[in-house]
Each structure stands twice: as C-alpha cells, then as structure tokens.
Length: 449
Image (cartoon, rainbow, N blue to C red; front, side, top):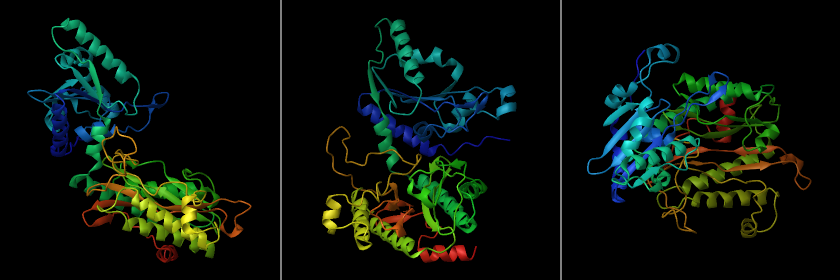
C-alpha cells in the first residue's frame, strides 16, 4: 500500500492567490484547520471528510491538520499534521507525516501536530492581523486555542514585537475564490456527474411496484462506489408516493406501489467535489395522465431556466423564468386561479413550488459564494451576473399534497427535475444528462430494463 498525493500545482496557485490578497491588506498570518474526526459511538468514528476550505488550499485529506499562511516580505506556507506512527498505521493505514507532506504537497515547512502548542506562539509574533475561517462549521476549540496562542505570544514578547490584535474572517474571500472553478475542478465534476447519472439509470431500471426505497438507495451506492466515488455528496433522497412531497425525505422502508411516482435526489462525491441529480419516474414504468401533465410542466420550467443560465443573465433569472412556466401550468391545470401576473404577484404557486430553482455546486453540495453582487457588506445588493466557470443546479419542482380544494387526481404527486450546469461563455453545459429527463425516454428505459 502506498499514499498518492495529488498534483500540488493548483493548490500552490490558490495559496499564492490568498497570500497576495493578504499582502494587499498589509500582510498578516492565516490559520485554517481541517475538520476533526467525529465519534459515531464508543470507539467507532464516522467516515472522515476533510474541511472544504482547508482541502481547497492544500489537497491534504488527513485529519488533525492545520495550515498556516504567512504574508510578509517572504511568504510562507506551513503545515502541522500527524507524525508517522508505525504501530497506529497497522490499524488505521499510512500517514504522510510532516517530512513527506512538505515534500509532496509543496509546503515551505511542516511540523508534527504534537508541536503546535510549542511553535504557534512564536509564529504569531510580528503580525498584527490574524485571519481565519470564522464561519466554518467547527468546534469552539479552534478559537480557544488561537486565543491562548496569541496570549502566550504577547506574554513572551512583552510588547517588543507586534502580536495579532486584529482578527479577520476570510470565509468570504475563500468563497469567492471557490465560486469560479478551474479546468481541473470542472473535469472532476463532470466525472462525478457521469457516475451519478449511471446510478440514477440503474435505480430506474431496478424500480418496480413492491420495491422498498432503501433498495433503490442500495443500487445508487453500488454504482457510486463501483465507479470510484469515495462517498455520497449528501444523504440520498428516495421518496415513493406521498413521500415525494417531502423535500428531503431520506430513503426509508416504505414500499413503492403501482401508480406511485418515485423521486430520487442523489449524487456522489468524487475527489472532494459533489454532484446533485434529481429524477422523478413512475414505479410501474408508465406515467398516468395527471402525472404526465405535471411532469411536462416541470420539464418545461427547467428548459426555460436553462435558457436563462448564461453569462448574459443574473443568478435569479432562471428562477424567475421557471416560476412563470410553473404558474402558467398550474393555471392551465386548474390548480390555481386568476391571471398569470396576478398569480405570480401573490405567489399563488408557492404551496406547490416552495423552493428555489438552483444553488451553487462544488466542494459542498450547497456550495459557498454569494448569490448577490459584491461588496458583501452592502445591503439590498442586486443579483450577481453569472460568469464562466460557475457551477449550479437547475431544479424546478411541483408538489401536490392532499387538500379539500385540490382535485384528487393530483394528490400525492411530487416531481423535481434537477441537473448540474457549468456556466460557459455561450450558455451552460449540462453535465448530468447521462440519465434521461424526457418522460417518453424514461418510460422507454424502464420498459427495456
């Protein structure tokens, strides 16, 4: 067994970009920790997943590690990580250790995590500004330890050298960096999308009345791992019948009945990047009349949203386009009343379509980045224009729960259609169409399973 490091070129470039930004503010020191391991029960841990910001800058995916970036006359990147430990490696696998980590991940220096309390106070001296990712989901020990190191640094210098007195959150800066994907990131995301599409195809081909939701989840997981994905990007949603009207229904023990629609919202994570696909299909392989009518409305809404996903449109244009199509469809089916403009103005569509049409996608399934125009501190900012290299989902839906004023033919119909799109200079590239989206093509796929 051997460890394989990713090409460090892109990570070096990102660190240099962040260091240049730090120098533009007069310099300082940035401290970014990766996610800790989490106990599942007793001596068993959840499968480890790194912190996205940390990995974005390092490519290093082992736990209990810290990145230190120093922006000064001579920039430095320093890693603290677990040392080699032959006895523990017998149980848990190989570690890089500081020496190999510095070499293979191109850090200027690397130290054992055991020495971090000893070394950090001296690293902090001489810098008035301390930067970190204050909005990251982490335990409070990050800030407790930083405060203690600053306190020790101040005590040791007795005012002879500067110590951090200005703390700055760099989460927004990293979010803006991560929002535009480079060529390497886009290639990984295309591969993740392809794997996820294969999983959805297999689930459609396996589905039948009498099948449990968890059985389709198992088919998804089988394909994801078979094709090299390390994990799911989020807990898979497999929702049969009425469950399809629950937006985040996790795959359970419910059975798919003849006449049910099945909604699957699932995607794999590959090399740190998420995919996110939703498809809705009939358990018996044939849409009913009401199901097909609503399905075609959602598909038309998605097509309208796709047409409004380009560098000539702002982020919310796709949502606005989808709402118009969905609202008109609801009017045509008699599910709401009034004129189109009135129904949009009063949000008459909202009981049937209560979420937005998309979100950023990247290292996190709901990825970082403002949907509004920077500067991030201003109020009432306009929607930001889309730029080439952004990746987002396009996912309109319709959900009809039983109600006295709703025709029973539409009860318990939940439909969502979701694809991942890379914004390009000429429009957008849909990277998840390896699984059918047209109703006729879905029925044909299920007939020939």
